[in-house]
Length: 292
Image (tube, rainbow, N blue to C red; front, side, top):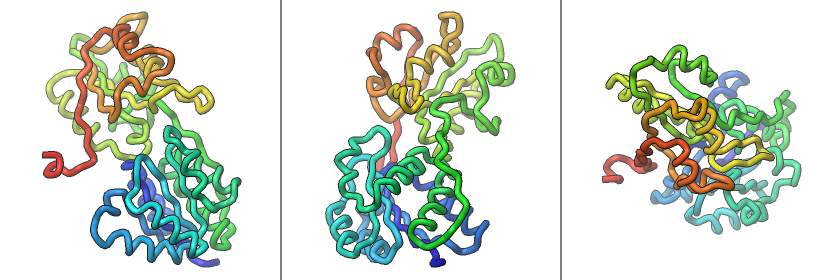
């Protein structure tokens, strides 16, 4: 069996941490069996990064491209890998216009289906099994693998819990009567991708100032086929009880307009039902200096 060489480029910020973590975990457990080169869209904008990545990808067993928005020099990357006959997987997230990009892929339909689920369900465990799947399919390995596992799409998060607790469990430990309660909305992909440092700091500051905090992650728009219940369900089941809000204010750490997180209702209708102030947090993938 050859060591799996996999090239991975992503423009989705929450992809990198679990992918790197999974590569390290697989190599620690099984020996040095995976060699990976990981680049982000930002890396591709840096001088010299594109050439280095393509040189590695040309000699890889398989190259994965995961997109949200544009990738600089995408056409050059695709044409180069097709000329080199490197199996290529290209997709967006669940929420992107995937039909447009699927046609660039050269892996089989069955491989595409499995890779898509591993990658978009996300998280370290799914990526570990993705790497083993790729090793079996493209590097002659015969590892035992688990199928893609669908993650929770919404839930309560707090760094003091090792799991996503029920509302009752969380309230018993973290909601003190008589104190104001601040809700937080943030993306499920940030929770799944282990990208919660900014949420942890926000939680710590709210608690330092003497308020309760109720942080909840969710996926965005309702999708019954995938079991995604959307913002309206989140509000009704986590932020309201018996028709009344359990929070005094909500900080929205979502990257997009609330209108993209609703299905069959307007943001105004849903937020009026909740009836508390919403504060929009500013999110950026840039450094502090770049943002300034």
